[in-house]
Length: 116
Image (cartoon, rainbow, N blue to C red; front, side, top):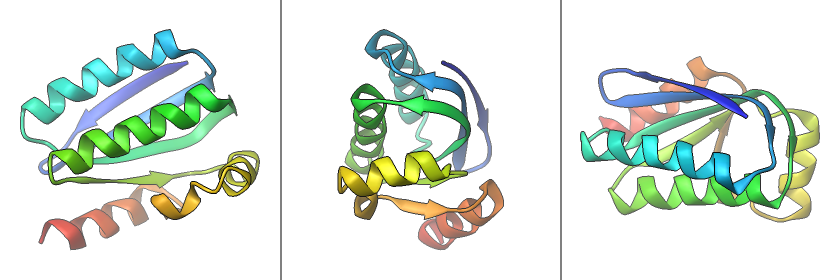
């Protein structure tokens, strides 16, 4: 798994590439996000359009990001969810916990409504 983080005014866009299968890699991303939360950015877009495979570690990562953001009075929006990931979220019944957008621009609109 690789990721990039782009900070904007009130939010950060986290783009994840590759497979999300390892808790070790997850911890690195969570540490980077904690630094951003410490800088008082608490709204995140998690762009998953380039994610191949995801297992329970990946789902757990999404839940940890959601918890970290909401604990800081923020929120997250998932964008670019593939059909495979959508099915996994439905099977595990966690899709209702997340705001979901088809792309980053739509996700920004959702979050801007929450911020303002």
